[in-house]
Image (cartoon, rainbow over all chains, first blue to last red; front, side, top):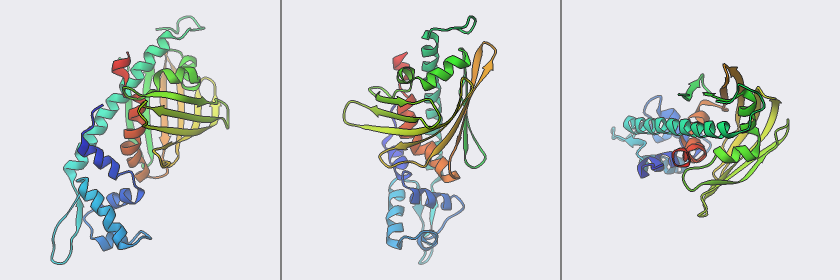
Length: 115
Length: 154
C-alpha cells in the first residue's frame, strides 16, 4: 500500500519509547523542554534531539512565549495518522477475506461446515 | 459479508472480531498449521513468509519471518501459553523491526456461530502508550506486511 512519505516519518518518529512518552505527555497539554525532560533519566540535549525528530515529522510544533518555547501536538497530524489507521483497518479486513478463500479450499471433515 | 471489528478496550486492550464461514476447527487450524498460515499471513505485494515456525503446543515457539525479496524483512517471535483445540489459543508475541516491540499477550477464541465461526482476538499490551505505538508502528511494519496484499492475491 502506498503510505505518504510524511506519514511514514510520523510513524517512524513514534518508533521510540521516549518519543511516545513525550507525545503522551503533550496529549495532556503543551509543555516546555524542561517539563518534558523531568520524568526521564536522560539529558536535556537528548530530549531536545527527540523533540527535533517529532518536529521534523510534523507531530509537534513550538511557540514562543517570552523565553519559553512550549511544544504542543499538531492535531491535524494526529488526525492524519488516525485516517491512515482506518485505511489499515480495511487492509486487515482484506487479509481476512483472503483467509476466507483459504478456508473455503481446505478439506472439511464434517458435513455442513463448508461454505 | 463478514466484517472485521477492530476496537480498543480500556487502556491496554485491542479487540479484533471476525466471522468466518468455516468451522472453528478449520479456523483454528488456519492459525496453527504453518502450511496454512503461510498461505494467508503474507505481506504486501512482493512479500512472502519464507520462515514459518508454529509449534502449536503449550510452550511451543512461534517464529514468522517476512521478506520482500529485496533485502528488507522483519520477523515476529512468540510462545504458546495455552491451547484448547479448537476453541481457544493464548500466546505472547513481539515484533522485531529490528528492535523488539513490547510483548503483546493475545487470547484468540473460536466460537461456533451458526455454520461458521466467530473469532475474537483480544490483545493486551503492557500500557496505553505501547498500545498506541502498536496501532501505529506495529501495524505499519507488522500488520500491514501481514495483511496488505489481499486484493492482488485473491
